[in-house]
Amino acid sequence: MKLHELRDNAGAAKKRTRVARGPGSGKGKMGGRGIKGQKSRSGVSINGYEGGQMPLYQRLPKRGFNKPNRKAYAVVNLGLIQKFIDAGKLDAASITEDSLVASGLVRRKLDGVRILAKGEITAKATIAVTGASAAAVDAVAKAGGTLTVAAPAAAE
Image 1 (cartoon, rainbow, N blue to C red):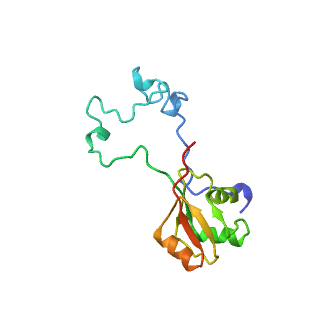
Image 2: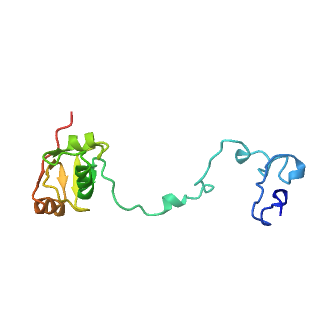
Image 3: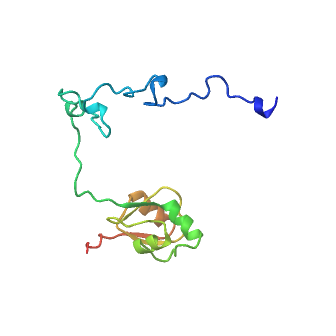
Protein backbone atom coordinates (compact mmCIF):
# COMPACT_ATOMS: atom_id res chain seq x y z
CA MET A 1 0.00 0.00 0.00
CA LYS A 2 1.24 3.45 -0.89
CA LEU A 3 0.27 6.86 0.47
CA HIS A 4 -1.64 7.80 -2.68
CA GLU A 5 -3.71 4.62 -2.36
CA LEU A 6 -5.13 5.51 1.09
CA ARG A 7 -8.89 6.07 1.10
CA ASP A 8 -11.57 6.59 3.72
CA ASN A 9 -13.97 3.69 4.29
CA ALA A 10 -16.99 3.86 2.01
CA GLY A 11 -19.62 6.14 3.57
CA ALA A 12 -17.27 7.38 6.33
CA ALA A 13 -17.14 10.98 5.08
CA LYS A 14 -20.42 12.31 3.71
CA LYS A 15 -20.13 15.55 1.75
CA ARG A 16 -22.40 18.30 2.98
CA THR A 17 -25.12 19.66 0.72
CA ARG A 18 -24.10 22.94 -0.86
CA VAL A 19 -27.46 24.72 -0.99
CA ALA A 20 -28.21 27.26 -3.76
CA ARG A 21 -25.18 26.41 -5.89
CA GLY A 22 -26.81 25.87 -9.28
CA PRO A 23 -29.32 23.45 -10.82
CA GLY A 24 -26.88 20.51 -10.90
CA SER A 25 -26.75 20.37 -7.11
CA GLY A 26 -30.40 19.41 -6.75
CA LYS A 27 -30.82 22.30 -4.31
CA GLY A 28 -30.32 25.15 -6.75
CA LYS A 29 -32.36 28.23 -7.69
CA MET A 30 -34.36 28.85 -4.50
CA GLY A 31 -32.31 26.52 -2.29
CA GLY A 32 -35.24 24.50 -0.97
CA ARG A 33 -36.99 27.56 0.45
CA GLY A 34 -39.98 27.63 -1.90
CA ILE A 35 -41.37 30.79 -3.44
CA LYS A 36 -41.48 34.19 -1.68
CA GLY A 37 -42.89 34.53 1.82
CA GLN A 38 -41.37 35.13 5.23
CA LYS A 39 -39.51 31.83 5.42
CA SER A 40 -37.77 32.39 2.10
CA ARG A 41 -36.01 35.47 3.44
CA SER A 42 -32.79 35.47 5.40
CA GLY A 43 -32.70 36.38 9.07
CA VAL A 44 -36.10 34.84 9.87
CA SER A 45 -36.52 32.95 13.12
CA ILE A 46 -40.02 31.84 13.98
CA ASN A 47 -39.16 28.92 16.25
CA GLY A 48 -41.91 28.12 18.71
CA TYR A 49 -44.54 29.68 16.44
CA GLU A 50 -47.34 27.22 15.74
CA GLY A 51 -49.42 28.99 13.12
CA GLY A 52 -51.74 30.77 15.51
CA GLN A 53 -52.29 27.70 17.69
CA MET A 54 -51.37 28.24 21.36
CA PRO A 55 -47.66 27.35 21.50
CA LEU A 56 -46.53 24.35 23.53
CA TYR A 57 -44.52 26.44 26.00
CA GLN A 58 -47.70 28.38 26.84
CA ARG A 59 -49.95 25.31 27.04
CA LEU A 60 -47.83 23.53 29.63
CA PRO A 61 -48.46 24.28 33.32
CA LYS A 62 -45.96 26.47 35.13
CA ARG A 63 -44.49 25.28 38.43
CA GLY A 64 -42.55 26.86 41.24
CA PHE A 65 -41.44 30.37 42.01
CA ASN A 66 -38.16 32.18 41.46
CA LYS A 67 -37.46 34.50 44.36
CA PRO A 68 -36.17 37.76 42.86
CA ASN A 69 -34.12 38.77 45.91
CA ARG A 70 -32.64 35.35 46.69
CA LYS A 71 -29.19 35.39 48.29
CA ALA A 72 -26.38 33.87 46.23
CA TYR A 73 -23.44 32.61 48.24
CA ALA A 74 -19.97 31.67 47.05
CA VAL A 75 -19.61 28.03 48.17
CA VAL A 76 -16.32 26.64 49.52
CA ASN A 77 -15.63 23.08 50.71
CA LEU A 78 -13.45 22.34 53.73
CA GLY A 79 -11.20 20.04 51.69
CA LEU A 80 -10.23 22.95 49.42
CA ILE A 81 -9.50 25.21 52.39
CA GLN A 82 -7.17 22.50 53.78
CA LYS A 83 -5.46 22.18 50.38
CA PHE A 84 -4.84 25.96 50.25
CA ILE A 85 -3.51 25.96 53.86
CA ASP A 86 -1.10 23.12 52.97
CA ALA A 87 0.04 25.02 49.88
CA GLY A 88 0.71 28.10 52.01
CA LYS A 89 -1.85 30.24 50.18
CA LEU A 90 -4.01 30.66 53.29
CA ASP A 91 -3.04 31.45 56.88
CA ALA A 92 -4.91 29.04 59.20
CA ALA A 93 -4.74 31.54 62.07
CA SER A 94 -7.36 33.83 60.56
CA ILE A 95 -9.39 32.99 57.47
CA THR A 96 -11.89 35.65 56.41
CA GLU A 97 -13.95 36.13 53.27
CA ASP A 98 -11.43 38.72 52.04
CA SER A 99 -8.50 36.34 52.56
CA LEU A 100 -10.37 33.62 50.62
CA VAL A 101 -10.80 36.03 47.69
CA ALA A 102 -7.16 37.19 47.91
CA SER A 103 -5.89 33.58 47.88
CA GLY A 104 -7.89 32.87 44.72
CA LEU A 105 -10.06 30.18 46.32
CA VAL A 106 -13.18 32.32 45.82
CA ARG A 107 -13.61 34.49 42.75
CA ARG A 108 -16.11 36.92 44.28
CA LYS A 109 -17.98 37.05 47.55
CA LEU A 110 -21.46 37.62 46.04
CA ASP A 111 -23.79 37.86 49.08
CA GLY A 112 -21.22 36.16 51.29
CA VAL A 113 -19.22 32.94 51.53
CA ARG A 114 -20.74 29.68 52.74
CA ILE A 115 -18.60 26.78 53.98
CA LEU A 116 -19.68 23.19 53.31
CA ALA A 117 -18.29 20.03 54.91
CA LYS A 118 -17.06 18.15 51.82
CA GLY A 119 -13.50 16.96 52.35
CA GLU A 120 -11.34 16.76 55.47
CA ILE A 121 -9.78 19.57 57.47
CA THR A 122 -6.87 18.81 59.79
CA ALA A 123 -5.46 22.29 60.39
CA LYS A 124 -6.47 24.23 63.50
CA ALA A 125 -8.15 27.06 61.58
CA THR A 126 -10.06 30.13 62.71
CA ILE A 127 -12.66 30.90 60.05
CA ALA A 128 -15.14 33.81 59.95
CA VAL A 129 -17.71 33.72 57.13
CA THR A 130 -21.34 34.57 56.35
CA GLY A 131 -22.67 31.03 56.35
CA ALA A 132 -21.72 27.43 57.10
CA SER A 133 -23.41 24.04 57.27
CA ALA A 134 -23.74 22.41 60.70
CA ALA A 135 -21.50 19.55 59.56
CA ALA A 136 -18.79 22.05 58.55
CA VAL A 137 -18.91 23.76 61.96
CA ASP A 138 -18.55 20.33 63.66
CA ALA A 139 -15.67 19.29 61.38
CA VAL A 140 -13.69 22.47 62.10
CA ALA A 141 -14.35 22.13 65.84
CA LYS A 142 -13.21 18.49 65.72
CA ALA A 143 -9.92 19.64 64.12
CA GLY A 144 -9.46 22.07 67.03
CA GLY A 145 -10.42 25.25 65.21
CA THR A 146 -13.38 27.63 65.28
CA LEU A 147 -15.84 28.55 62.57
CA THR A 148 -17.89 31.65 63.33
CA VAL A 149 -20.89 32.60 61.24
CA ALA A 150 -21.35 36.38 61.09
CA ALA A 151 -24.14 38.42 59.58
CA PRO A 152 -23.25 39.69 56.10
CA ALA A 153 -21.83 43.20 55.90
CA ALA A 154 -24.31 45.85 54.78
CA ALA A 155 -24.15 46.54 51.06
CA GLU A 156 -22.51 49.84 50.20
